[in-house]
Image (cartoon, rainbow, N blue to C red):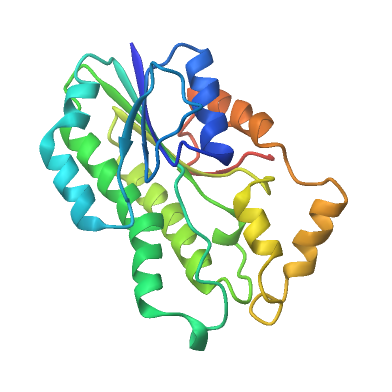
Length: 238
């Protein structure tokens, strides 16, 4: 049996991934700050603020995740939750927001990955998918924290791949520019803080943002594919 752990499952790409996995009858444990009223009843939902390291450590210590995976033959971890804020040059970035961002975008995925790697048994395999971004590979003014956090996921995947642990596959995947709440936030930002804002406004106006459900379908197909993990860093757009 395949089982999946999905962070940020309540909206956007995460909700799409949840729906696709559920359609394929894969049990999902969803982790988010809020409850998802649209989630299938089979989805086990955990309300947890992943930007709070102590909350995450406490929850891992309770054993709910270990109980969820114990009868799975293959475990999927999709590290989807993430923030783009703070946006702006270095002098505008509040230190506490940087700390929350790095905890959510970097520390939480690494913590969940390590926990699962330590607790799968000899008969189980683990596939880890970090939802990365083109911003991991191309710097943008105003996005120094976001670029750095996504680049960290890429480097994490590359290093884990070099560990060559046969029962663990990993990939940090850029899914493209998707029509989500994050894009709405980007379009609403002060252009003085994000000089590339107009590019994303134009993508929306020209209908060039990817549909979240379509992207989720392609992402799950990639995750379940026989070649997953062959390349530790990849782009869903090819």
